[in-house]
Length: 116
Image (tube, rainbow, N blue to C red; front, side, top):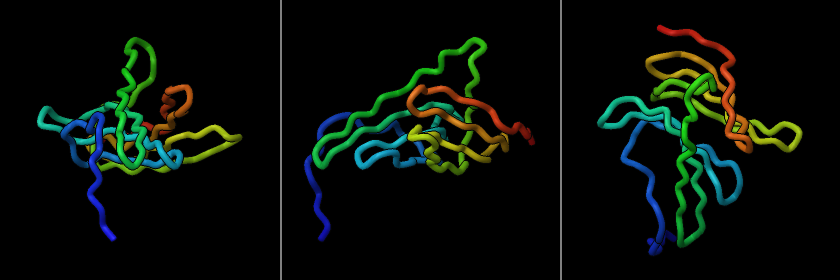
């Protein structure tokens, strides 16, 4: 049976071609995508229940910190090692690279860089 609950809280930004990867029963990681302003490199942690949604944008600290460039149409998967969840992001457009995100620390590491 389909239901349409009344949900309060934030909605994700207008975007398409992103990945949304479940982390727990009530959280997910949203990364990248395509917007009216071009490719996004934004990272969002989304917490939700049956009646509420909370979208937290994780800011890119800039400087020498590694952070993926904007892209869309990539793939992602949750990998948990030693009880630490990681997001593996592969491919996409315009760069076909591979990144690993430590979800708890919000730290990216570039594994492979292949720019077309």
